[in-house]
Image (cartoon, rainbow, N blue to C red; front, side):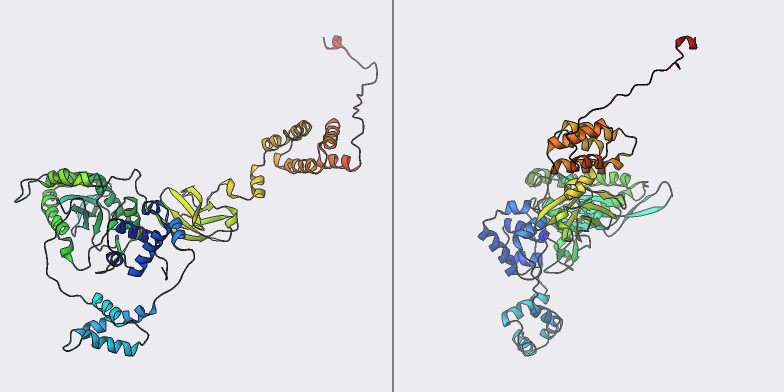
Length: 514
């Protein structure tokens, strides 16, 4: 597993394909990684005796820590050298008398430390596009779901502004029964594509083994005949629904002939039938599309004694995998450095989230969805927060603060009274008198901290006597109690002289007020 570590969403796809019985070479081509990399991951699993089902349940950062103890950064320069020459070699191979052996000899002279003959020929053949005869494909029930967007758009009228708003139409079909699904969405962006795909699986009532999207940008980052790069959000979606993604080859429309035919049928059975109708919301448009698609699926197929819906309900739906209990949420992956105030900032919302203070200054991985924020470090989860969209705000957990900061936040009259009660009844009485003074509580917290410090460093009996003197003389300061202890005045008798008024004749009496 040398080289740049693969995304764990891709490794989960590797595990699912291996679990489904795929060969190493097929997995390597499908996921765009070398056969040796696939072998090394599978060998590590077998040698460690890990269960694939357990690994698939792990979050990406935790799974990554199992495979990658460090952070290797190896890159094979030989392929980089060869990649720039492949177009030239492919064009030369079409010339009379030019063979792969001749081209290899020229390559070896230019790059003596390059690939051997077998690897050179392998990469060259991978690059060359040879025409192949077509064939009739047979499909298993509940195996694949073909996905595409219709080329033509539908529209509705904004009832407030009168503007005509065009929308994209998402189309999917199960190739075995040709059961179709369609829904209008605002755009082909990833968020709309994922929403439409989730609605499709919900309408089907289950999940097929493979999702087969066209090479649209919302599904495939980089189209390729052999090694397409799947959008990570789609990989997360597939992992959530316990399925795998198998994009069609670029520039090969025959690979998705059934969904292309489904689009043509939808033009005839949906577009054409609603061409003279007006709609004033996307929801209203989708309600009509759903009805027309139901009619389409219930229409008897040519040369077959059943309709698409009958075939789907009888032979495919029972074989679909169950839907997950929770709906899918798009994940965003980021890496941040924990700030000195032990918070990280999600720049998308300009909101701060707390992290245990031990990770201050360290890099952490953050995965956040529409509703949750999860923070990982050293291969384990260290913080979980509910997503907050308040700009400039802080979401903090008191347990993440150091003891000094926790104490500062906990301070209140009730906090100090509760702290004094198990130490001494006299100290509790003194704290009660302290907080009855006509002063702001925060001005008195320092006095309480000082008295607690006296009890930590002094004998409790002597401290109690000093506090009794403070109560007797109604002097509730820290310095008064400290001076009593320093000057050894704790043995002084607690005598409070009651002073009475002197006798005099200046007393009016009640008769004066009558």
